[in-house]
Structure formats: structure tokens, C-alpha cells
Image (cartoon, rainbow, N blue to C red):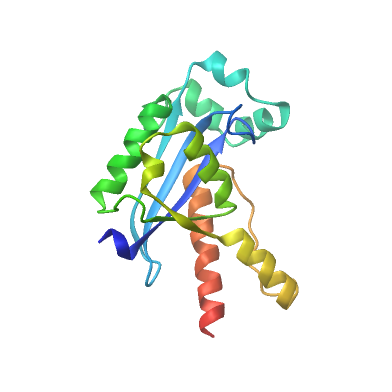
Length: 183
């Protein structure tokens, strides 16, 4: 089953540099590679010591995660949690195994997905062994489409900067381009 699936992903982090920052939230959606239908989706917050998080947030990221409610969810323990990056690794591996993904075969899909991949490679241990060397970046597709076709007819949306909603928007964007390619 896993060979027929792709994994749409989005991460929320404390900043932009994997070696200096932490993963705060992960959203994943397993989709059929053939028709882009959703097979399963899930999300989790990644618990860290509160002070450890706050010391790594710059003002811009702090304001963003305050506005979108992510920091409040941490403060009030709302939603599903795993503990630390090791817990995230175990959660991702369990998700991949449940869906039949094999090591070296998970094709990541997302908006600027190389960013997420770099954080996963820095902070998780087993899950990166599941990743295929290829990935599908829907933001790159959007950049190319705009260059070739102008700014008309391009899917636009506000990113809430929450993992699962942003992964869903990446999937919407992928479907948009699939439909344009099929026309």
C-alpha cells in the first residue's frame, strides 16, 4: 500500500535554522498518489520545556504563534502531544508503519517541503530513513506556474501557520496544479 501513497507534511518550528530551533507541531496527511484522495491525517504538538521553547523564539515567530494559538495550546495542554523530538520520531514511524510505508520510499509533499525535511533530518532519528530522496514542493510548482502563466488563476490563501491546516492547503494547491496539468 505504501508505494501508492505520498505524505503531505507541515511543521511549525521555533525558527528557521534546524540546528538552532525546535519542532513545535507536526501535521501529516497520507494521500493516494494516483488521485490525491486522503487516506489518513494526523497532527501532534511536540512538548518541550516551556523555557526551552521561549528562549528559541524570536519576536516574529513568538508573535505568529501567539496569534495562531499554538503557544496557548502548549500552555493549556490542548491537543495530542508527544514528548520531545524522540516522541515525534516514534509517532511518525508508527504513522508510516500503520500505512505500509517502507524505508526509503516516503515521498514528502508540501509547501517549501525541503524546510520540513531539513528539520526532520536534524531532529528525528528513524523517520528520515523512510524518506525517498525525491520530494514534491508545491511552492516551487506555484512559482513556475506564475512565471509561465502570469498571476491569473493561481490559488491564493493565508497560511494560519498551524501544521495540519497548512498541510491541507498544500494538498489543495497540489490538486489545483494536477487539474491544470490535466486540462
